[in-house]
Length: 204
Ligand code: IMP
Ligand code: MG
View 1 (cartoon, protein in one colour):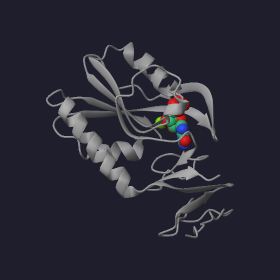
View 2 (spheres, helix red, strand yellow):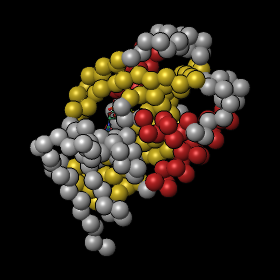
View 3 (cartoon, rainbow, N blue to C red):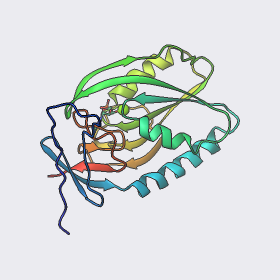
């Protein structure tokens, strides 16, 4: 099959409606800036996996009123789709983490917007888009751990098992992936591509 390409138009003048990344319907390749990505996980595969993961979480946390903490920006789409399938009482909160510049992890992780989240005594579930080296997760666990949660677990859409350098358990995973750069469904390349409903992988 010949993959159809879609180029991003770089507008110099501001327009009323900004569409930073355009994808032709049915195309299997997207081009973001200088890189081509091909489809890796379809919308259907993602949604099916999320329903399965939500069922596990529902079974494990029935009656516990868990606190789900989404790690922004990347987890926003996964978080929202996951929460639609969570049953019973629960609360939500967000932290903002930044560890990536372009395609390289910077190694340093900064968090913002932790204010207003009461962690103490709560069953906390961290919701991540992707776990790569695990540096972000480790730093977040260190911060959250100080605030005495009753329990602390993580659920992630994607897990790059080969890249993982930490020993913390990854409790709930939708997909174990190849150790390559991924895009879409919340994940960006240089700020673009988060709006794609599928996950794409960097083309060789
Ligand atoms: P880690 O600290 O190395 O585990 O990486 C954590 C964060 O880096 C993720 O939450 C993402 O925001 C970002 N990241 C890691 N791998 C990718 C990728 O393949 N594409 C886009 N962002 C990524
Ligand atoms: Mg993330």
